[in-house]
Amino acid sequence: MIDQLHSDYFRRLGLVASALAVIVAGLALRRYGYAVGLPFLVVKYGGSVLWGSMVYLLVASVAPFRNMRLSIGLACAIAIIVELIRLLHFPVLDEFRATTAGALLLGRVFSPWNMLCYLAGIALAALIVAIVARRRERSS
Image 1 (cartoon, rainbow, N blue to C red):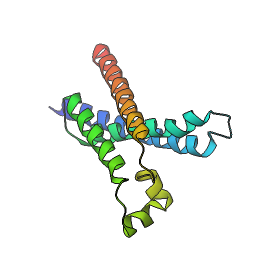
Image 2 (image 1 turned 60 degrees about the vertical axis):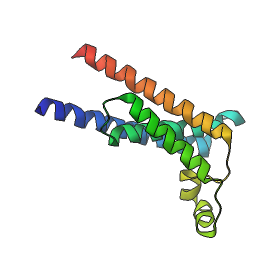
Image 3 (image 1 turned 45 degrees about the vertical axis):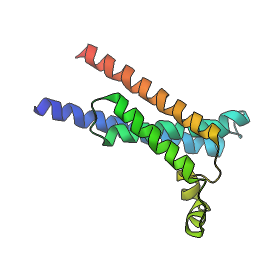
Image 4 (image 1 turned 45 degrees about the horizontal axis):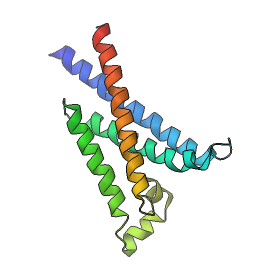
């Protein structure tokens, strides 16, 4: 029992640390992507892929689901809802979107391409988490 709690704690801690690393990568891509010569599509949509990955990692770290499909489904729902919220416009929400935090969290303009990138990021993060989990199971 205690070993399971210990293992679960470190699994969640690893997911949060991974989410923080993805956030740093996304901010670095946004700030330095063009400066290091990355193509427009990588800078524009790479951030969306990373954002989707972050959503999955945070959901997986917080949600007590042992079934990865539930975490994937919840992350997809959150990502799609956040994108659809961009279609809503009222003064308070638009004022928040005009801030840096609002732009990073909610974005400013609706794009179906962003939804595809979010889903790709969620799939990529889930795949990496599954691979890491399998390797840990084999080594223990």
